[in-house]
Image (cartoon, rainbow, N blue to C red):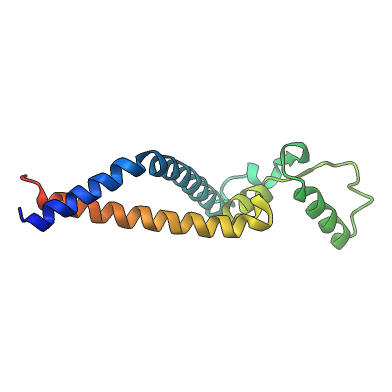
Length: 140
């Protein structure tokens, strides 16, 4: 093993040691959100096969405040404000679509998902680099 390769590995190990606490939590949060995006994507693709997605509703009590405004705007556009005035729930499909696109988190959801994508790309790229770098320098 050359001297520069050994120095490079020491640098990566120091980086890993000093950032382990931060990168661990960033990775866990990123993976959790990517799992949500993946799961909701599968639900959206197969929404015609899953019948409860068409009939189930979610109460406004458990959702962010902007859903109430969205429901009122939809009722006004459709002219059903009086007919459905007492109903305080939204279709489950709205929530799934909003979780998938980032609209669930309000006006900053798209920015949040962009940052999530950048973090995932950095983690993936450095993970692949470290895998091949360690594998190249290993005995086996």
